[in-house]
Image 1 (cartoon, one colour):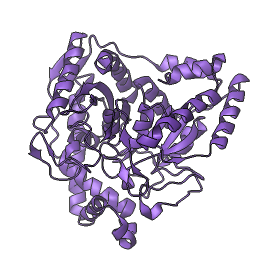
Image 2: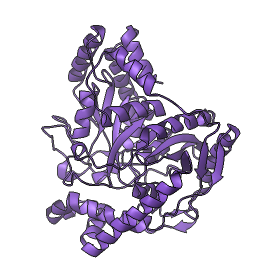
Image 3: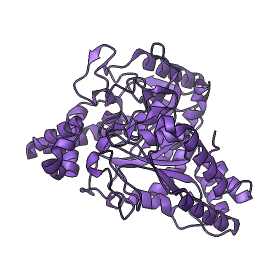
Image 4: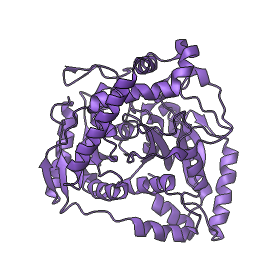
Amino acid sequence: MLPPIRRLLADFAAGRSTPVELLARCHGEIDRVDGVLNALPTRRDRAACVAEAEHAGRAIAAGEPVGLLTGLPYVAKDIFDTAGLRTTFGSPIFADRVPETDAPGVRRLREAGAILIAKSNTPEFAAGSQTFNPVLGATRNPHDTTRTVGGSSGGAAAALAAGMTVVADGSDLAASLRNPASFCGIVGMRPSTRLDPTLTDGPNGFDLMSTIGPLARSVDDCRIVHSALFEPAAHRPIEAWLAHLEARRTPRATRGLRLAWSADLGGVPLAAPVREAFLRGIDALREAGATLVEKHPDFSGADESFMTLRGLYFVEWLGELYGTERARMKDTVVWNIEQGMALDAAAIARAQRLRSAVFRRVAAFMADVDAFLLPTVQVLPFPLDVPFPTQVDGVPLVNYIDWLKTCYWISASGHPAVSVPCGRARDGGSAPLPVGLQVVGRWNGDASLLDVAEGIETVLGPLNAG
């Protein structure tokens, strides 16, 4: 098990370890397990990685100003451009594409000193929460290699869970940071929806549905990577960074927290093992002194607004490519694009109004509680050969993302959410599989949300043992 980021940085500063040694450890785990997991199918030249690690070590030893993530191995999602390293989008159309520049989020993490070592696997065009594609194959779950890691940031989640990296990024439209975090037993955060055209290189720099964000092995690690992504700062000596991090970290004790919760948002289908694990988490929080109130916001209009704006997003991103490459696109990607092409201005305007109404209702609800808790995903990790669930708890599903409502309704609301591990459950004769508890915070209150989530993580820790 790799130490947390805070300890890794302290060990670098004290000379107890070096970036070169950490890099070798991660490369060793890649060699040991990724032949089976297939989380990081595209890897950077190791000599170049070692050279960066050596440079980082010299700068730290000399007390020079460095970035927050200096010397930490990093994997970038395969929909983010990486200069000189293949970026395929999981599509045969781009199987051999090598970008010349880094995507904005990649650039920020590398400027913070993270050492890019590989690209993490993703579904074709990051569509769907099952990580497989015709270019790089499927990624297997470290907890049960017959099961999926979820997606679309699935390769990143598996790499973190297996100790192959320290830093990982991802993106989240419907559930793509939180779903794989839940399935792999790690932490994933969808930040507050904000307009930041500097953090996207997509065709619509003003998109307000998809967002980048961190995946991590703990809430504190998530906080640190979130800071590097969204609060880029001038370099400083590593000891100064450690003092800065300590000043910023204010985890909330669970006792005294007022937490709203709902297992199914009033009727969303939920697999029985997930429900049972989630309720064990709620009981543990109650026993730890939190005030638990069973209630949920009104999500009326969340489905229509999300599905409409998702279709619009796919047309913005892939509509032109569809005109020439439809035959080489996955059927669910084609469905998303064609759904978007069928929209008219009135439908788009209605979706924007509905989404705004959802945001306002959720914001009013959140004003009365410290956080809102619900299951991250409605099902356990499912078999690798299943593209997506078609029913949950006997309830037939409408489309290939219908099993992600507990995530994409939160996406539609624009509020930040963190998935933290909430124990394990079995599906028939499966190995014990991770279950995630989703902690939703107030809009633009990402730091406070992480403080609450860290306290919750501590209480739920014993449920994840073994």
